[in-house]
Image (cartoon, rainbow, N blue to C red):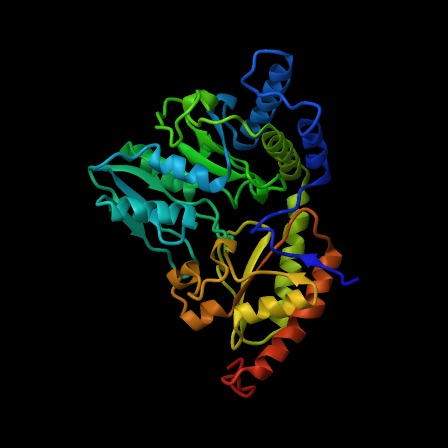
Length: 389
């Protein structure tokens, strides 16, 4: 049987065994509706509230400020559409996840004002650009904490200070930062912050939005008074319990140095690939990144062909956001960083998870250089004498 190694954890992560064990009882024995007042309902209600506490600890907020959602996309949309009204101006960046980018474009297409601030060649937003984009009718700034494709961390604390000074709401999509770097909503100074379960070894279909006390959100779904009337619908109890357990494990990892081990594996893989493969480089090098992610360009290849070739050998990687797979356009993130379309299409993202081992890195290092070599031999533009000049 072929060995398979998964290095696409920014797309989704496998459930950790401890998370599955925490969830298991809520599929069969503890099946009550968390809004019911009898024993079965109260049993699940207390499980939901324990999970809320765990997520609150991970984010450094009150449990009452956590709203459970179906995932990061819903959390991002609730943060934006729950807050803005006709006439309001939004500031965002042109490297956001499509959950934010397309929500803002929809707002713009409906006749409202949105400013998309650029990034530099390292993939970072300038706080000064955010400040310059402020208008009298600016209602919301939405800038991600960590980019899903490059792993580059944004200066969210500086942006939070600008938002506070201007008395403007600040939302940060922290889907790719949660569980990888410490998060403290007070230090960031944000009013809203999104996370997603399946990026932190919890199940798909659950997420959370931090909503600072006193922030009034209009619900996107109408129904019962669930989640303090901020998100109608019977709670996904098993999913929420899984998110709570994953948040607890993430907090432990941030405190016990486990993320340092992941960073060391990422750095070893990155350095070895750059040494062994000419005409390659790290997208976003020289700036702070989350510890599990590297995005590397390998000139004279097509990223999609590389992903397929490696998958046939048992290694799962990606060309960028899973939500964009199948798209022929180059990554909007890499193009925004000033790369040519060819350069962007020659880029591969490697993202590690808690299940990965040093042996997984060895496996990748045994496959990637040879695969790049074969693909370059097939490339009509590849000229061995010119590479590396």
